[in-house]
Amino acid sequence: VYFVGRTTQKHKTSSPSDQNGPKRTLPQFPNEKKTSTGEALPVFDDHENFYNVIKHDHIAYRFEVISLLGKGSFGQVVLALDHMKGKQVALKIIRTESRFAKQAKEEIRILETLRQMRETNKADTDGRDFPIVQLFEHFTFRKHICMTFELLSINLYDLLKLNKFTGLPRDRVRRISFQLLKALYYVEKAGIIHCLHPEDRDCIKLIDFGSSCFKKGPTYPYIQSRFYRAPEVILRLGYSQPIDIWSFGCLVAELIN
Image (cartoon, rainbow, N blue to C red; front, top):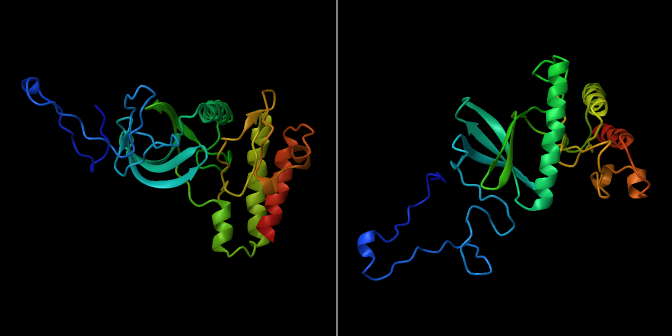
C-alpha cells in the first residue's frame, strides 16, 4: 500500500459478490502507460521517466513533499519534510533511465568518499572547515534512486541575478573564492573531478556531484558546462583535475564582472 498524496482518490474494484454480475473495470489514468502486450505500467512516472511529484506525497513512508526546488535532465529536487527526524531536507529523485541511474550511483560513491573524509578530518558540520554539501541518506523508491541532502539557500547564479549581474564586491568574491578553493582541495585529495558552475553555492558549499567522476575511473567525453569548459575538454585532448581550476577562474571572473 502506498500513500500518494492527500488529493488522490480511491478507485473501487469489483468485489467477490460482483463476479457473476456485469464486469466492472478500473478507470484509466490520463497518463497511464502500457507495455507492448497492453498491460498497464505504474502511473508514478511521466512519459519522460520523471517521478510524478505530488504535493504532500510521501516518499518511502517518511519524506513528505512540500514543493519542487528544481528540475534538470537528471531528475528533480524537492523540498521535503523528514518525519523521522523532524527537519526539512533537499530530496533528489533521479529519472529511471539507465544512464541517469548509473551516474547517480557514481555520485553516491563520490559523496560517500567525501563523507568519510569529513569524518576522518573531524570537520565541523556548518561547512567552514569542509565546504561540501552533506549527503544524509540514499535509497531506491519505485525504481527511482533518491538522495537526501542538507537544505541550503540560493546558489551563486541566483546571487548574481539578485545583483542584476553587475558583479559582487571584491571582498565578498575573495571570501567565496577561498571557500571554493578549500572545497576543491578536498575534492582533489579524494581523486575527484567535479566540474564547477555558478549553480554551485555566500557561506558557500560545493554541491551537485552528478557530473563528477573519479580521476582513476572512466571519464566522460562530454563534461562541464559550456561557458566554463576547459580548452583540453573542447579540443578532446584528455583531461584531469586541472579542468576544475579553469572553471574556478571563469567563475571568479564572472563574480567580479
